[in-house]
Length: 423
Ligand SMILES: [Fe+2]
Image 1 (tube, rainbow, N blue to C red):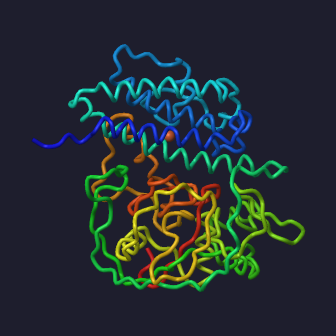
Image 2: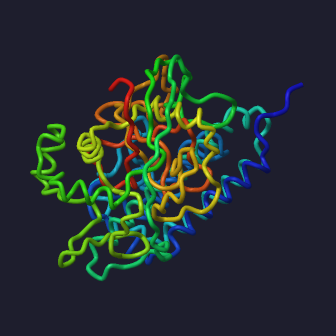
Image 3: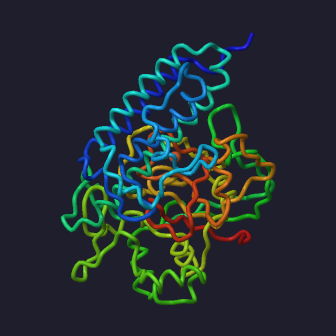
């Protein structure tokens, strides 16, 4: 007889850990901090705390809890993000207009659902657990995704405040950048995509073969100092470096530096969760769009890696899994060369030149949960790696993050590639 796939005690422990981490991230924030929405892409902190709770209530409790009733009827409307199959929902761009429930009331909602989920997990029979275990696990990873969004979003909220508030911590000491090194990769017929019995999102499947011409990939991310050279050479003024849609952004929105940089009387400073500080040339450049990453690569006479190139290089180089420690909140310096890839998971998501498309043979699951990833496979670019905002243990070598090419508020950076065949 085979071992049951899910251990209730382990699921309860992971549930407690994930839920507690969200609350720890919100702890430095006042109820007012948690209410503001500074642009349509940003959601208020309390909305994230409530929405991830709604996810467990909708996809777990409503399915199997005896005598289920929602904690509050209207919460179903307020905290549904994008699930058409679940019903109508409140306008995303106006989440910041909602003052009630307040941050304290959202805490009560969380406590209620926490207790009910714990009760449910401890009383489910093996058959039901077998059916629902993967939904519970998806709820953990979903909440972790929102933990990163919570930090991305509060970073923007604090950035518009002229008091330049600090979320937490302090910047790392300045460090001297070393030369960018290169890893040569043979390519050939390779396999990419998730394998094994561990968790993955549906978009990492199925594992499949693909052909790669020989290429090389940078051993670290592009630094702020290197980005300043691009700026000094007219990078934001030279149309020939830019994709057409990117140039429209540069001219239409007056881009002239990375998103969180500002010119303080001739000195560039950068807003971070640690506060606003002079730009450190040794740190990776962050908060640049795909358009900017592509223009920078073009300026260097290089290109961005494709997503299979990125994944194959990371696996072939023997990169260890993402670290389990607390996120550092801002990208750190690469440190001395090691002969291996550096800054893979913990600093900044790396733009690839690959559009976010289904893998060959992909099919979304049935029902509302099938809306999780598949319906977004249009008009977005893939990012790989992980960032200084990614929660512990969340990133994977096969993880496919995605954002529109103009997005600048995620913690994004640039890893260059060269050689091979441009996709
Ligand atoms: Fe969500």
